Image (tube, rainbow, N blue to C red; front, side, top):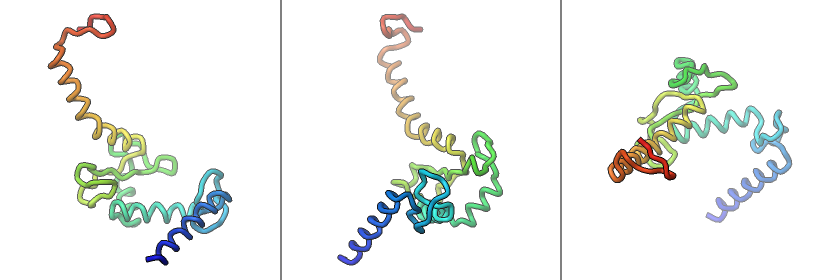
Length: 149
């Protein structure tokens, strides 16, 4: 047990040290862009590992879906190096960030993925708030001293 904790601490220190020096946290080389902590190769590996861990999707399966779908399912923005695909899934199906894989929906652009998350988490409470307000105050209510219809 102690050995595993020591290894974690060693890797954590290595990671933080490389970040401070401005070198890739994965391989130790200089990243091509300033402000990034990983080179392109290590970043891709990291993304693939995270995608597999969170969604159970292999790089091959992801690439196949991107090739088949080609654009955001909502706004139809074509995926390219500037507009990357984000994996959408039903957050009510699985607790936490990790998906069971059965609740996967289509690929979205970053902005639409954010909007879907906001709508999912805020639409229900917002509609309940409006219904409760109307039930309590009716249609004739005053706001800041002005009559509203």
